[in-house]
Structure formats: C-alpha cells, structure tokens
Length: 483
Image (cartoon, rainbow, N blue to C red; front, side, top):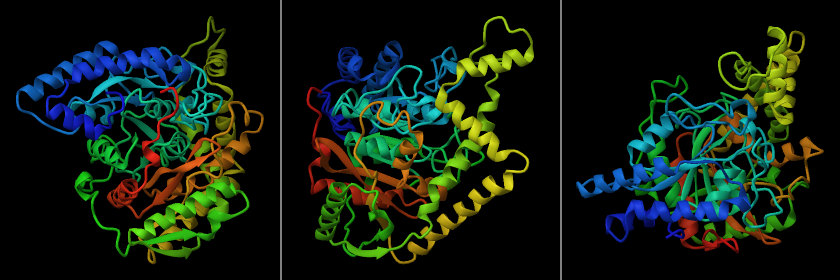
C-alpha cells in the first residue's frame, strides 16, 4: 500500500479495495519503523489520523467521493494545526500549540485528508539543507549521509521514502523545488497569492508560498486543487478562479515554446546535470515542444537581492517572538531587557540569528537606501526579464539546482556556499512566478531535478508539461534502496 500514489489511493478507496483506516494504520506503522533513520517528522498525530480516517470512510459509505477523501498526508511544521504543536523547527516554538488551523490545513481537512503528522524543517524555514532544525538534521533517503534539501526537507524525505504519498511544503527561495530535486520528487511552488498564507508562520512575507510535494505531477495537481483558492483572511491572497488541474494534464505539447536561458549553463553548473537537462529537453522535443534560447540578464543579481530582502522581512516578522506572549521564555529574567535578550538568544538557532542580524542591518537608518531599496529595484528588474521572456516563450526550462545533494555538514562552515545553491530557484520567488521541479535522472546515485517556470497563474501548464514528460520517462518511479 505504501507504494501507491495519491491518484492510485483515490481509485483504490473508490473501488473499496481498502479503507482509509487500513491505509492509515499501515503508514503509521511504517513511519514508526523507518523514520528514526530519517528524522523527517517532528510530531506524529496518530489519534487524529485514525479519527479522520474513520470519518472519511463514513463519508464514502454515505455516497461522498473526492480525490482527497481519505488520503493520508502530512503538513510542514509551520502550518498552524489546532491543538497540535506547531514548532517551525525551533526551540522558540517547541511548546506552542496553535489555537486554530491554517487555511491550507482547514481546506485539506474539509476535503477529507488524513493528517499523519507534522514534518521536520529548517528552523523558521531558513536553510537549504534541513540542518538548522532544533530537532536535528533530516537525512536523504537516497543516501543517509547526504542532505534532503531545505527548508521542506522533512516533507520531501518522508514522501521519497514512501512513508506517505504527499505532503504540504512552503517555498521562499526554492524550499519546495530544491528538496524535490534532491529526493526525486515533483514539487510545485504556485504563483504568489494562489495559496493562502493565513496560519502559515511567516519567514519573508512577500516571498513565502505554500505548495505540494508528491511523487508525480498528477498527485501535485490533486493536492494543489485542495490547497488553492481565495482567502479573505489573507490580504495577499488573489481572487482568481482555480482551474481543474487534473483535467488539464493530458493536453498536447505540440508547438509548446520552451525557453532555455543561456545564463543557466555557466561555470557553476555540474556538467553531468547539464547533460541530464539536455536529455529532458530532447524528450520534450519528441512530444512536439519547440526550444528557443533566451536571456535573463539580471539573474546574476538575484542572490544578493534575495539575501537582503528575505532577512529584512524575517527580522521584522520574527520580532514578535520575544518571550512575552508565547514561545520560549528564559528562566528568571532580571528585567525586561534580560527577558528579551536571553529568550531570543536561547530560542533562536545560529542561522536564524544570522539572518535577523543581516536583516536588521539592511533596514537600519543610513543603510536602508543602500541595501534594501536597491534590492527591491533589482527585484523589479528580475521580474521584467521574465515578462520579456514570456512574450517569446510559454515556459522556461533549466536545472533546479547547480549540484546534487551534498553531504551532511559539508557547508556548515560556509553559509554563503549553501546560499549559492538557490541560484536557479530564487528568481521565481522574487518575481512571484509559479515554478515546478520534476525528476530528471541521477548523478552518483543522487537524484537531479529539472525546473519549469511559467507566467502567473499558469500552474496548470507546468503540471501538464510535467505529466506528459512523466508518461514518457520513468525517473519519478525510482525508489530509494531500503524504503
């Protein structure tokens, strides 16, 4: 049962081959047995899962149907879940039980999903390796000595190891797409505003976006259908109709114009990954796609701009965690200043403290214009590059990451080296565009992803291309040894 995709689970439940309760028990036992190797979960919600599974079975018995009714998933541990610990991978929120459900959690629960637990993540979603979590690093099921990518590494590792069919995740600079590439999954970052951020604990509010992680584009379409939609509680949510993503998967790729930016194939890209990307291009050409070289001239400025904007927003968002109302509080503070200093010093890990400091500096008097304002101008130039490119092509294709997953601890002494691994993903967040990563092959036994980018609200086009590609390749069907 653990090998079934979301789509196969939906068909199995509809045909009464098994019940949601039976499936849930199998997966909970599998998590208990195998997750100690991976550390992909922070919290297991066994009682809630069995309760939701029984309710889903009852709804089906009463004649209800739906692709997500009775489907087991997990939530990245920054989506608030009522009465359940929502830690954000941080000691700061280790004791925090959310008093309400995030919109994404509520929408998926209403659709009948079964929540198996909350997945591990980089602390406050800050990281590219899932090594900054207070609960310990997550390991990549393809090689337990390597990172699974971050910050959604817990969701990615759990799905890749077949502990569950799909999970929610978030993407601020590539945190869905990069872990998808490192663990042989399909991951989709929707258009900014497509999925509600209400109840999603913020890192950088103008960049964060929730999305699905699964093994196939078809499964991502099913999960995104349950997540997407306008939310009046979120001021950045966009009131745009949500198409039937699954219905659009089988469209022809004949005449599809695919742009390949020349800047993607510079000195920083592993040549073996470049070869796999070329193989992916050839597969899409066989399906009728037309390839065109394009240019994104301001891509080189994206990383410095991102690492000013994101920490600046983080320093503002994380100022609420002060030891007063909720979160970690130090023992026996001498006065208010001591309470603030020690609560934050003890509650936040080194990576979070580093980004808060950078952000506070960039926003300080005398430096705002030189750093933050300039970064926002670059952000606009990056967006303009994409708008120009999409006048000529329908989607943009390239590598998801410049290298395969690195060894645990390999970049801990050089944070900038880890930041540079986001070079291909962060531009989509700066511009607010949808992006998808899908499996494209292996280098030294480690998975590699190909990234697709599309104009605003064209998630359906990305899913269509990925689905057609997956009908003609088998990379996404490979399973890590031992799982």
